[in-house]
Amino acid sequence: MSTVFVVNAGSSSLKYQLVELASGASLASGLIERIGQVRSSAKHKNAAGGEAQEELHIQDHAQAFGWVLRQFDAVGPSLDDADMIGVGHRVVQGGSRFDRATIIDGRVQDQIEALSPLAPLHNPANVVGIRAARAAFANLPHVAVFDTAFHLTLPPAAYTYALDRSVAEEHRVRKYGFHGTSHQFVSRRLAELVGKPLGETNSIVLHLGNGSSACAVRGGESVETSMGMTPLAGLVMGTRTGDIDASVLLHLARNGGYSIDDLDTLLNKRSGLLGMAGSNDMRDVRASAGAGVEAARVALETYTYRIRGVVGQYMAQLGRTDALAFTAGVGENSAETRAESLAGLESFGIVIDADRNAGTGPDGDAKERRISADESAIAVWVVPTNEELEIAQQVAAVVA
Image (cartoon, rainbow, N blue to C red; front, side, top):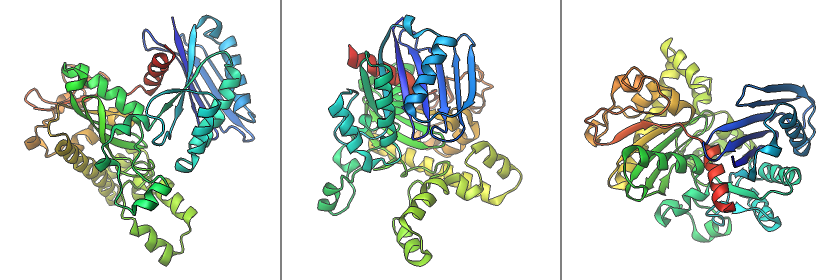
């Protein structure tokens, strides 16, 4: 029963999961939040129903790992019996340097830290988690799995910005893309569902959550994606603008007195659905739209309009599209969003079956199901993502 311990460290949080490789099952998971604050919250649960929850002061990530290890001893499952083969770390930004999962040593850890200017909110936190985990699991190999690695197959035309080349090269400005582990997992599963070899399958994956991105995958390789140098670009998201005219920032700075930090906060934390409709929760926005709130209605139309445009663009780039998948929180759970995002694309070969989409078709509301009509030239599926399993599988491949 070989397992991998998967870590996702934030600046003040630690999310983890113990994944069994053979079955893909999660044997235990947990989340520690508000690390370094006066009161931290910590949760741990296992597949057998055991659970621990506590409010306490956790000073740093090293102390957080100490709490985690105590829960495995007290609540289970026992890590001594788990046959752990490695620890997998989600790392947001690998730049153009890391095109695959990589064993972490001192040099790799330093390189991840050196990429922090490209992901100042994420990579420093990832490094803090790596340091603490390497101390807690000193006898195991640690592997970095990068959000950006899957997208390093983008052609130059897709990743190049039309910026002064010397400036772009000096400051490493290019499209990197994110959500790579999710897009890789879902596109591989899509090929299995449509019964074609991965190398012969062209697909579009729509990862719609609080952060959202789209990806065009040709033969198992990412050839276009909506996020850019940072996770801000592309689709409308919960609190992020997605694509916006860069001159808007100049306008706000010159005429509104906005500082760089003000603009950063506005674009990343006060925009998207939250900025347009007052909530970053799709359920709340739909409820408001249903109650006649015009701002919420426009927000929904903007959200799905952007998705529909990306789907058409990616179909043109792929030339032939075999399948499309919705995944992540909104993609997996909002039938209305799925229907509205693909409305009017029947002439492109996408025909949605309303009953299947609503969960009242022959497969019911199964988490993974086909939602396109039998006559649809392009198969459309709901495919739950499993980034932790993808990370675990990549760790296993690297360790092997």
